[in-house]
Length: 292
Image (cartoon, rainbow, N blue to C red; front, side, top):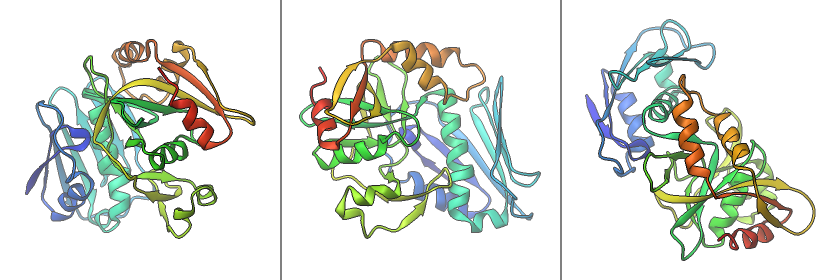
């Protein structure tokens, strides 16, 4: 059994000796349309008897790719040279569909795609009304990226993704793996429509509120990287050092050879890095609308 899917818009041929992995993969990426004409990444999934892993996988990068290992029965690896990944799972893992999806399937495939084609960006991406160029909202976990992205979406901006991936090429195309926005519990106090939303478990294992956006697109050409800083007072937008922006993105890069990603990021951020200091969301959106 096999199926061609397009996570991040990239072709991935998924084959399995059990139906469950294909069903879960189709739930994750079935709606994603193709964006890139490229040789497909091949993923083979084998299900065998074995115990439920005691913990999530450990990651190890190598010259030719990387491995993800939970225990001897549940493990995966990716080879750059063969453009192929293999995932071995114990059957009890497939009974934990969300755990399998977040900890193994999406982790393996998205990390592989970031190794061969994309550069992962720890940033949300939104596009202002009546403009074509995306704005990346950047900052450490808890800085308010998702909250501001959702506020922008409510204000008429187009939502691209909560976690961005930069494609090669001059167009600076940014895409993501999901059209959902994951918000922390305090967001209920900011947005009335979220008060009845249940908590779900995010890929990082934390509880969150998952919601959609009024206007969504698969990808956008990105121009600005805006680093967020909460502080009292009126919103202010000023230039941010490009070197610091590259260092921020590289801190989340897991490639064995990081030189290509660093060079790509240096080209990407040139002339478009900003610091947004703000308190109120409406004030922050008004400041973002002043970007050149």
